Image 1: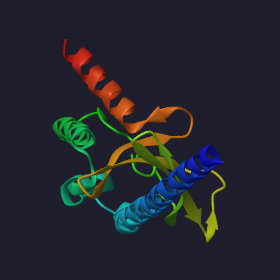
Image 2: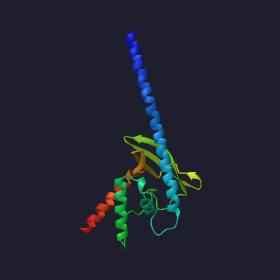
Image 3: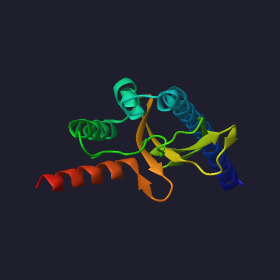
Image 4: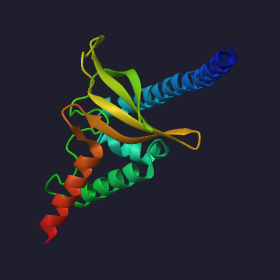
Length: 177
């Protein structure tokens, strides 16, 4: 009987410890979803506006605190290379945050799932009030020092922004040789 009580107390302790952690995980995921939605709410009007520079440049200049250091450095490197080239496209030729050349009317955040130390947040384009059945992009987030940061943007079909930026950089470097 005594062993049964010890086991019961141990199981109860495990349940009590697990519950707050689960609540923290779900509130953290919700917080990540909110972060992503706020980014898109601010970014999409820039992408829809007629401009001489890509909207991604606006994000680099005005929303840089939203990106982790590696992603921001790669974006800046790509933008600088593109700015130096006057006759051909040597950098991104699509909007990296929308995975499109033609933005939708708006973008809506879907589910957020934890994968190791990152969270993946689905982002859906919305046209004429109708949400696409598939996400256009999956934002990869990290939570550091009490703040969310974009670490990467994954594209359905196995591509992701960091890989695309590294490939473009390697292509530029091979053309210089």
